[in-house]
Amino acid sequence: MPLRLDIKRKFSQRSDRVKGVDLHPTEPWLLSNLYSGNLYIWNTLDSSLVKSFEVTDVPVRAAKFIARKQWVVCGADDCFLRVYNYNTMDKVKAFEAHTDYIRSIAVHPSLSLLVSASDDMSCKLWDWDKNWQCTQVFEGHSHYVMQVVFNPKDTNTFASASLDRTIKVWSIGQPTPNFTLEGHEKGVNCIDYYTGGDRPYLISGADDKLIKVWDYQTKACVQTLEGHAHNVSGVCFHPELPIIITGSEDGSVRVWHSTTYRLENTLNYGMERLWAIGYVRGSNSVALGFDEGTVMIKIGREEPVASMDASGKIIWARHNEIQTVNVKSLGTEYEDGERLPLAVKDLGSCDLYPQSLRHNPNGRFVTVCGDGEYIIYTALAWRNKSFGTAAEFVWADESNSFATRESSTSVKVFRNFKDSGSIRPALLAEGIAGGALLAVRSNEAVIFYDWTTNKVVRRIDVPCRDVLWNDSGEMVAI
Image 1 (tube, one colour):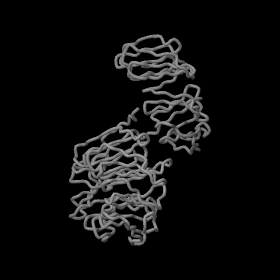
Image 2 (spheres, one colour):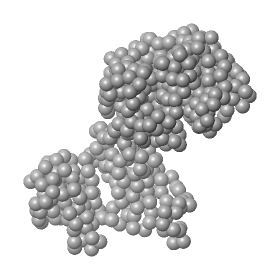
Image 3 (cartoon, rainbow, N blue to C red):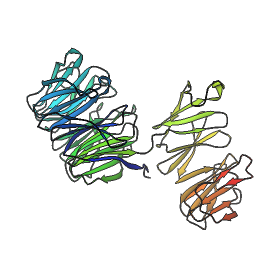
Image 4 (tube, rainbow, N blue to C red):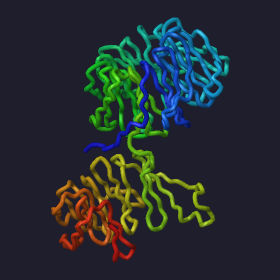
């Protein structure tokens, strides 16, 4: 079943060819570096131009925020690295870093280090606390180095992609590569690391139109994704969602499931070739750089999926990990809106990507829904009690009964976790609601069914978006 993640365009700006994009970790800012030699910082909320830098008259192929210093750093075809303070607009530093075009920059997440990659076939490590001294040169590629990226799980290592058809993994302090990944038939343009803790994966895109997923511990290619009609120029493992995003000179952006590798969606914003994909941890937004401008999309929702039982126990999902906390034990001395000091416990993990969580009425079970499936877990031990496929799931007031909407023409009822028959409603079911009676709703009417007999109790001919019962189950709001 598909992931059903909403994708909305939140920002779009036409410009000259965009060669790179980056998102600020705390401000609503998007940095784009242009083939024309300019840098732009856009406010993605109101589409206003926050800052612009006329860097040089040759292409700027790489640029990144260094937010902890209030800097932007960029590399251009004149072989210079330049650093600007984005608040004061002052140029902090400018120096010749390579002997050929600078293609890519990676900023270390915690240390005062930056790696640059160039057409001179080398990567270089720079330390801004040592007045931007070059502390290491990494040599081993036999063609242009197109992208570098730090490993978020081991920030002492980084990977490089090259037109020599290889990916190399390096350690800070060692001038030669730890190992080389080979498998692409043409030059490799782009790479990214998987940020989750469960898989040691790296993804690459190349001029052979293929995307490859690598296990960097076994050095094996675990999956090859096909579908783009031209060179693949951008790849990313989304840091918050179970998806891979790829972009190509064919102008399309493809969204793939990062576990099943199924193609979920194909986007095209009519801005010609894609050159760059940017994201930031903690956000569902993704920036895209094209021949004719910049787009930012938001995928899914950023609010956590959560449920609370009658005793004040909250269960929520962070990706596929499930966590729990009890707010009843905190007492009543906290004011409305005050941040609570929570003792969070890890409860377990979930076999599907959660899009909703719901306790049953007595709080003993929790349903996780997503990807067109549901799993019922025990709330205390997080053990799998039951599972199935469904577009929608609701509990009855009687705690061991529930219903699932399989399609717009079929609803299944379960009692004591066993199938007790199907309902074929006399309308196109757009949704169902639990409670004292089972409600099947459409934009024309709502029909109430008895949970025990599956028979119609009442039909009310009003357009219905939701059904809410009072605590006693004697009154209902439509």
